[in-house]
Image (cartoon, rainbow, N blue to C red; front, side, top):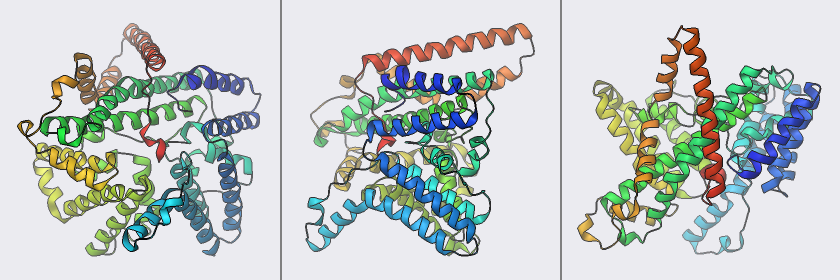
Length: 469
């Protein structure tokens, strides 16, 4: 079940919301949310909901052990290792077996057919952060197994994040404030995310998929560049839209989840890009991997090695193909280049920095979009191929006015226009104007919800890119 579906919007969510707010106290509300979350997961992963429950109970037990033996590294080692090994089994066994087959000519991968649990990368990382934070003393151990299970399985952020640390919701598991203002703010955030996903991501994603599906001999400069730019918009509005919906849903239920995106395509360096893209993941790697490895405190060579390790694992986290690893390493390579002094030059020429960053990100997205390296290389070649060299579709044949409008709307909304509008609002001190503004924005969000609902009902194209992660 995804948020941008009829079953969620018109059946599951209204039912859960009604039962939740009719519940008399926080304990009952938590039980409602836990049952709802397990049902939400079981809707698409009926048999694997057992994995979710077992994972929660295991991490609950490990947390108690870590708290009792805080001076010992053994319980932390076992807890983190089991979580990572579970992730490796479901995501990477096929990749490892296929790589062995390619090297020594065996057929290990032929009989492997492991179903990837939805959201396993997200809830595994949340479990690891809980164990480590208990060991560090920055989080209190959770003695109620149902409360820890709720933290791990909470449906608004279960399948696509943001990656929520236990310390960020620890208090809310026991005490949450509900108000009309907070609920309305959450609802508006949800409507905004839904519109980003349905009205922009789905539209640009469909044409991007259409171009990527063309025979590779038919691709050339303008087609290939337009396809990868459309994909860049697709993945941004798809994922950030889902994060907005998750943050909005959490706010309606009294939880405050961390922000996950901050207009990454306005970045002027890859360093800045990773401070703006998938913030909860990059900060997780910083706090639980990069800094424990030594960060930048042990000299330049060690810093570069640490960056290599972090972005190798970042690529691995995203999927079980070597192209994801190459995608991560490409970002890591440019981070190292920037640390060697290139970033100082970029700061002196901001426009050049912006162009450079976009080019690196777009080139890297090719590896992210195309799972096979040979196909990715062919696509790279097509990005520099003249239309005179091929006989096939022209870009104008594939595009119409409506699509071009959505594409350019996506480009514009990739810039921080909304913060500018909110800044303008903050300068209004006239009561009548503020009331008019509030009424107008409420109508705007209702219109977004209505348009999104109509789009969902009338379209069969509604993919979610990060579902597989």
